[in-house]
Length: 151
Image 1 (cartoon, rainbow, N blue to C red):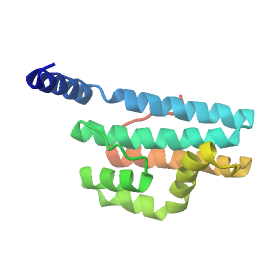
Image 2 (image 1 turned 120 degrees about the vertical axis):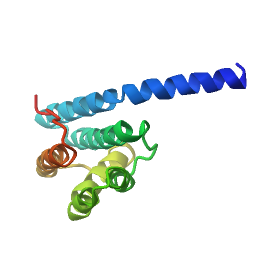
Image 3 (image 1 turned 45 degrees about the vertical axis):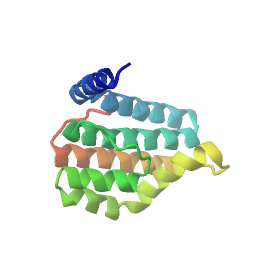
């Protein structure tokens, strides 16, 4: 493929991705639904992991919706800072800072549920689910988009 052809393919891909970043939101919703299912089954480690994935993809969705692409990082701190800056809404990063322990627990789930023997308890995952629902509500209000994750 020539350099010119590669450029055209890249532009077409970027144009298509800009139009259809909704798949990130859909995957986020599916990870949330799976987290609830795993919670009911008593699989708390994977429940927490799925909540983190839902959160990460949802934030990336909102970023991509605004700028046409999403950051390749997995760090919620960085993603929330980017989201706040891109939407020019300081309250987004303030929300992150006010709920830093919640986001830290989600980040722990991303790393520890796969590579370390840390176990997430029913009590902790129940709190994570409740906090994530509050975060969903915050995003709906702040970014003015209905999410309907509990349907």
